[in-house]
Length: 424
Ligand code: ATP
Ligand code: MG
Image 1 (cartoon, rainbow, N blue to C red):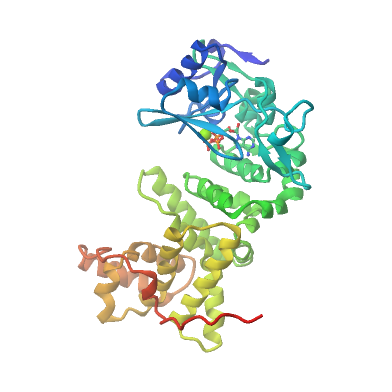
Image 2 (image 1 turned 45 degrees about the vertical axis):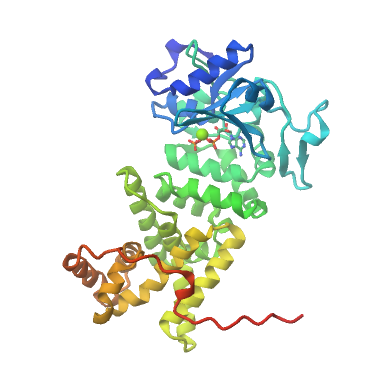
């Protein structure tokens, strides 16, 4: 069945954004089509409160812009319009058509020789738009005026069966956009749905294609994967499908190889999920510090065995690991600096030098570094009881913690020699 009337769907209008309704009303008043689409409809049907609202229409971006004073056209890969209404931003997209269909404007759609979609701005009908979406459960259209849902892709059936299913042929859809594999995993973890068997099997074949995704997009996706409160189950699924390799291959290898690392990283994710649930502050820096710690520690241990001092070893290993990871995911400096500070604090916290106690407590990264230290202890390192020691110190000087101004890159433990240009 493709039309689900209001009486048959379980959407609670209380959860529908009035701003999104206003956008739809205004489009319709101007004789365009307008529906609330995507994740918002899925979440509404599941009885959850959506975190944001997308609207789809047959009006072109220019036409949408003409209707709303606050509209801004953004995006290159997909042109979309942001309509601001108070503090809310409603994302309005024009129906997309099949990118290789005859009659489509040639330059509007572009595909690489491997099937990857480079540009996808061919407009289409609602039915075509539905077929271009990623998952059946993300391809439902809600009409907030009469409360009905258009469900041409059987999304409701998969919601009932609690299944994540890619639309169309999974391998073809992953080739067009490998990030869809990460989205499958993200929604399976978030909704606690199973992954439909062909959707799943194709991931095993297409996983390596994620290497083609630009590092900036992968970092955006990293944040969605791990910062939304379902990081732990997401990580376990990424490991199961060997997709973590595309984000941080060395960490993925060590986490699978050494149980203590798996304990540490899953625990870090679990703690972060709990913080999200409690509405507390979370930072990607801590997550990255924990996720990449197995690599940093392994490299630093090797350097120490080769005769380097512990602090220096962590410093060099950290530098290397950030540089390598940035080839895959573009970690912005505002996160990579604190990540390295968290690592470099580990050796100093382990050492427990009495003269340094107050400085270390005051360090801006003390709390995050202490949290990582505890995770290391819980996952079986002994570390000279440093965790207990620092807990005592915090009780003794509660007002000091994290009060120092931020350190800058220049104050890293090693004085830099001027870099010589490499020849050849
Ligand atoms: P979230 O709860 O994370 O916002 P969402 O489903 O709304 O989930 P968005 O990234 O906001 O996800 O995308 C909005 C909609 O756009 C999706 O529901 C889906 O229909 C479509 N979409 C997003 N990314 C893709 C993609 N890579 N390929 C095809 N369709 C996509
Ligand atoms: Mg969304």
